[in-house]
Length: 215
Image (cartoon, rainbow, N blue to C red):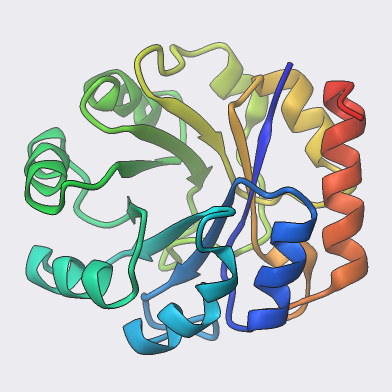
């Protein structure tokens, strides 16, 4: 069983370089307002070490499609991750406009919220399950109910990404319960918002390898 890693909320070149050395398949930057926010120009610099080694993901929340298109171009993104205003129609239009994969985020509040997975499956290139916290779009360090999600329909025609409260101590359980294709971590490997703790990054990667039986 293979589970890829995405280290998100990157703000420093050295953190991206370590992520690549640990075999991360994805590295992400956040364009939404907050402690981890970077500009498109800064994102291009931060993500430079990932070119050709890991896919560069940009996280967007309250952005227009025009803003997303400009940032994706200026930051040389490989994937767009859409949090706010997620609908199947918008995802379809963005994929066509950008000619890039689009990951759609479903914020898990209850069983009803998981119905969105079916609507996005096969429309988005990836469906990412994240925790719901009022007034926050992510990076809260709070997990959602993994067993609730495990009992619901999972994506069949899109990459399944699990996020929300993952850290070196919890990721093995998330892998076992959810069987995702990708685990996405941000605050769980930080010593301050946007500043990664390299020991925790190494521990997270080791925990994933151990959980999946990879060398």
